[in-house]
Image (tube, rainbow, N blue to C red):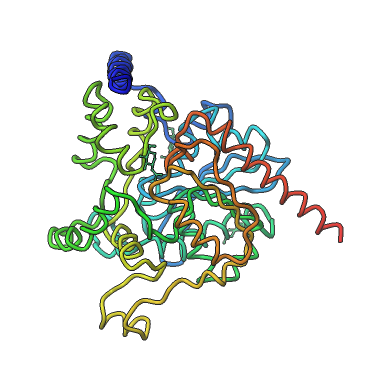
Length: 401
Ligand SMILES: *[C@@H]1O[C@H](CO)[C@@H](O)[C@H](O)[C@H]1NC(C)=O
Ligand SMILES: *[C@@H]1O[C@H](CO)[C@@H](O)[C@H](O)[C@H]1NC(C)=O
Ligand SMILES: *[C@@H]1O[C@H](CO)[C@@H](O)[C@H](O)[C@H]1NC(C)=O
């Protein structure tokens, strides 16, 4: 009785707030890009093009800071650098910049800011889309780090990744171990390497992955959730409209990653859908689905004969997490249905240099709260800043010796 009364109240409140949002019109921040948001919240932003060894051209945003060293931010799947700035004054990028860190926000291939190539056309050439999180780590993250170190003249940087943004770090550090020295500390928000304990409905979606994949392949669907394609636009329009927005929130967002209306308030959905989804591709989703179904953090599975050709073994090799020597701080949400506490424990045991493990206090902290929650400044940033400061001091000490 009490519970249903409570539920009714929540639904009424949500309808009121979303309807109100509808009449207020689209908030400005839904439309601004990273650079414009940076300006709006008080900082100068520079834009660079990073070219990878295999020809992809990625936007890299820079908010110059003089007092403290470079910090790189790496976004998750279907997201962009925008993830770290759409909360405005309360966003991680702006909070770091306000504290005079030298902030860099990267992008991985295939998203809105990474849809360019020296000679492949993403609209025509299917081979543009022949990548997964493997290439996003092996090429994109490598090129981004090298670009920043060259531009700043520093020997190493501090890096923060969210979700797939952590996966690409584990790929890079295990496949090109020389990059371990270039990362002073890696802060992994909602770390994703193992997906053994996914909860439904996401686990169900991934179980259907192989079947969906064949359909997509037949249809020639390589690019998915592009920001301006008609299906994505329709979804975004519906999601940002009043009562439908509420349904969209309840039916689409919350079951997949968990959305807590206290942390991600309905008024903020319009800003979110203005920036995401911003594109990914079939092969990336298939690769994650393989990781989950095979319960192994391994290279892409091409099937028996191609695996033999490529890897010299019938199954793809696992990424060697023993080669990840850089310090890693793990930050985990108790209610994260993607980067579950159980799976991060598996990862934690395989890493040799865990510099900190932080379970965020709120019981309902979930996967997207690491970039979207309205109280990141209370529960998340103090942890991030304490880790960053610790390894700044460490730097100073080792310089003295
Ligand atoms: C962001 O917006 C500004 C101002 O409209 C524009 O000059 C810039 O090219 C945009 N940047 C990107 C990466 O789209
Ligand atoms: C390294 O930085 C210098 C100047 O800061 C620039 O001229 C050069 O092109 C950069 N090299 C690469 C590979 O980015
Ligand atoms: C998140 O919290 C809800 C409500 O307490 C619970 O039903 C669900 O199982 C939790 N999910 C995870 C992944 O812990």
